[in-house]
Image (tube, rainbow, N blue to C red; front, side, top):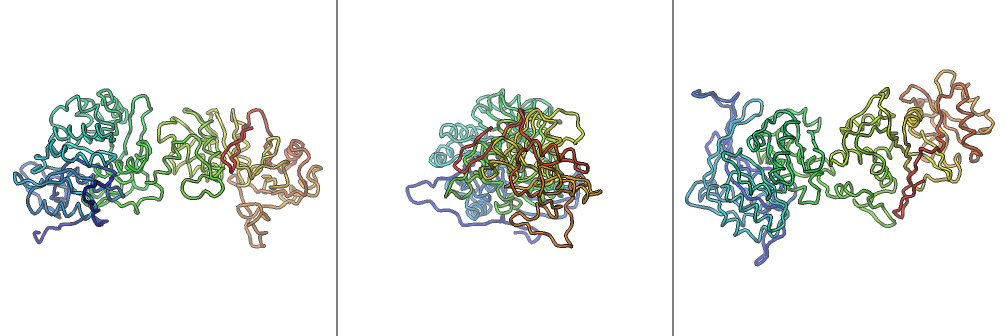
Amino acid sequence: THPHTQQRFPRGARAAPTLQAGRVEMRDVIVVGSANVDLVTNAPRMVNPGETLMGTRFEQLFGGKGANQAVAAALLGSSVHMVAKVGADSLGAASLTNFGTLGVSTANVTSTTEAATGVAQITVDATGQNEIIIVPGANSFLSAADVEAAAPSFAASKVLLTQLEVPLATTMAALRAGRAAGLITVFNSAPAPTEELPEELFPLCDVICPNESEAALLTGLPTESIEQCEAAAAALLCKGAKAVCLTLGSRGCMLCQAGVPMIHVQVPPHLKAAKVVDTTGAGDAFLGALAHLVASGKPLVDALQGAVHVASISVQRRGAQTSYPQAAELPKGLLAPVEAAAAASPTPPVAVAGQEGPCAVSPKRAAAIAAVDEHVKSGSVVGVGTGSTVSYMLARMAERLRSGALADVSVVPTSKKTESELSDLGIPCLPSDSNAPLNVALGGADAVDANGHVIKGGKGALLREKLVQASASRYVVVVDEEKLTERLGASYPIPVEITPIYSQRTLRRIVALPTLSGCNARLRYGLAPAGLPGCAIPGDDASLFVTDNGNLIVDLFLNAPLESVAETAAELSRTPGVLEHGLFTKCSSTSIIVGHKDGHMARF
């Protein structure tokens, strides 16, 4: 290597898997495409015609769209077959070594003496944007015969990735072979096609993945706005593709499928705010991650978020393959196929005795998912409570919004914590004083009696939850069987929200109420009623719990169950200083879903 150049290998090097004689190893992804060496120059800006400009850095890296996509999938954990052609030269030998180091099978990577290994001249400016000139070299000699020779590898794979850096006839042969072998066929229309693509190509694609400029070339339609991009994607569907996944750079990606609402997956805010260093190979990172996730068992709609995340990380680093993350660098659960399986199930399995591990779902979570699936419809305005049950509901709503099963859902939260969760999940949040009618309100509960009366407010949001309940056409409460009790008052204290002014006077009035005579009324310190298991009685230096409304909570510990929930509720409502109580009496608009350990759910 020239003393002023740098040759780098991607991170995450690992030993190449071996093939036993007479047997082809089962693999996840097969890539038919290019293998180049990237010659990367960094400069303050792009050069003008006829101008000589001093660069700031030069690197020699491994690239090629096919090779990049193969490496991106391998670094995430997929086993990958590569079908490619390199020159019989030092760059070709280095490319084979690079594949082997990363565990990408080179059984179908052949060499030729008729051309040198392909190269790409890449210029990267100070903002991270790039311009690329490709000399295909040996890539031009990858043929349909090479695809035919790789038939055993096709039979041992699940997902096929193709691009346009090898002859179009070769790409067409690969798509036909993939369709014949029953693979999920993915066509990346890059580099931008210089000739009209044959009509036969599109029906061979389970997924076609262009960027905005490529979509414009393929359809003749503008792609500047999201609406224009969606129209272009629809035009590609009309050509016969089953799905169009259009990458949108810093705007994420969109998925369009016939008869299904468009899904727009945006870049996570913390990644969008990060500095862009180099966009080279970001699209390939997206496709490699997409193939890995789909091959791992995730539905296409659920794979988009992980693919966007991987691509968003890659632009923060230099180079193509050297910028791709490994699985350990990604948020826990982002790549897990189990989560997608649970999300795709209207009522997932719940944990039963002796069942452990990632497939186990608690009865409360199963009931929360069922509540969303049964009661939240597209176009709904939903009120939500606070706590762990609501967290499960919000996660389910976010999954269904991402998948396209739901659309145009807005939420009215009852606490600052819930509002923060909505923001993190990207679910639209309406202000509390919105005039939009509430179609349904969802929440958990601390206790439910045999008549359907409920105690709520363990997290201190009872006033807001009561206001949301009163505004909703339907109110849905979700609990597990442990929250069921014959009568309220014995299993969980009754929370009451009171004004800070004259709080002690209010306490004395409450304990003097006829139906609550003899109860133990405690001002709440900390996040849960003092005296419950795990919640010690606070010392003199403890701070009072203050609600989001600036009020206090009194927890009423009873010696015996309530004789009449309605009568006690009425007495508390009439007491000066009491703003609201945690007794929610059953009414005709209330539905209760109870998750049981044996897997069934009761509704009343």
